[in-house]
Amino acid sequence: MRLSTMAFMGMAPVGSLVAGSMAMQLTAPQMVRIGGLCCLVGALVFARHLPALRAMIRPLSATRGRLRDTAVRAQTAMEVSLHAHH
Image 1 (tube, rainbow, N blue to C red):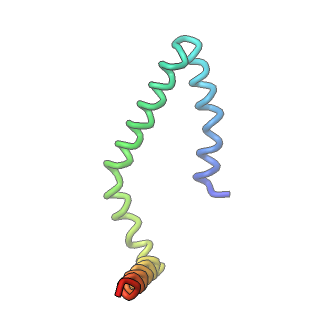
Image 2: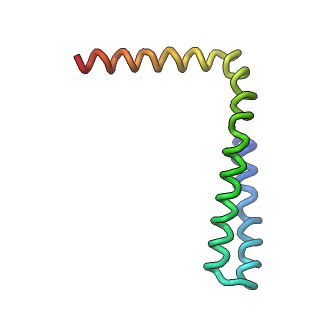
């Protein structure tokens, strides 16, 4: 099992415990709104850092040949699509 999956699944019970404890002080709908806001903030932070992450990953993918393989598959799919329409 990948570390990221273990970290994600391992944190779910902790998050549920925290949300449940906070829901005792607030209401459940308020906690759902807070949870949604946290997800939105997390997505915005990730989106802001995405270009830097791509720049870090691209050299690794290129050295392993994944970018070349993806480009070849995309070119082949495009050629097949063009021939199918003629």
